[in-house]
Length: 329
Image 1 (cartoon, rainbow, N blue to C red):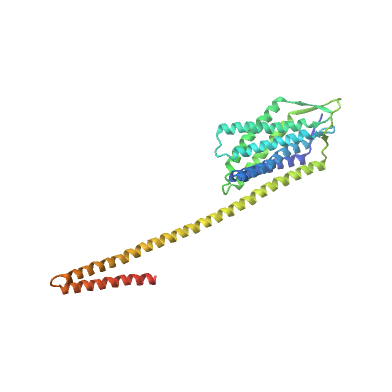
Image 2 (spheres, helix red, strand yellow):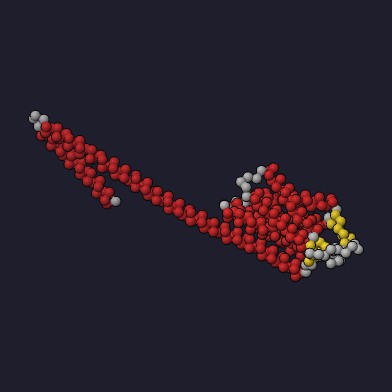
């Protein structure tokens, strides 16, 4: 059978792939930054949005494809492929939110995720119901699986790298999303090229199958882009709230540091005051004691007692001056 593609739908499928890739990079940062039940919420919501994006790209790419006979889709199988896409997204978000990304973990995760994405595509192909038989070029099938694994490895590394959301990496993230979206598209259309179709006289089983019109295709694309846009908007809002909370926490820390600094300054001032006053008071005590000793002698030494009393008055005035200076301050 001769197959054709709708160029507009093909372009839209690539757009979905790029949007899903950017959403994946964005959501990876939110999952990593969250803690407790909030992380579980971001993982669940992010996996649903990512899974729908990945599934929609593949399914939109299939809807861009047409045969000279009517094609229907077995909807339980289609839902199974969607569930597989969501499971792969949960796994990906879990992996990139870990503290480290070792080579063995990255490779094993890429094998699992790539296998899930390849399974998603071929499960969607198995959902096709038409009057014909599908044949596969196993070399291209193997090549598409390798592409899926390689794309998954690159996607995991990029998501892990961009999860910390450093400033100034907006263009790099967009570029990475373009690369990831192109990789997803290459994998999908390589897998589509692996299939060939021949007519058959056997009447297909159309039970539990639906026909998707052009309007239905447009609806799937629109809803997918809306979901991905909502996911990215939620991520942006959450990032803004997190930034505001961080600014508030920093302001509270600054206030606490200022309070501690004031307390430390008061402590230093108190120590300085005590030192400045203790010196003349110690001299007052010393001179007063000396004066009492001069007066207590059998023959009181009035001159020495007088000088000691003068020194006592002088030191007392010195202490008074210190008090006056502090009061003026």
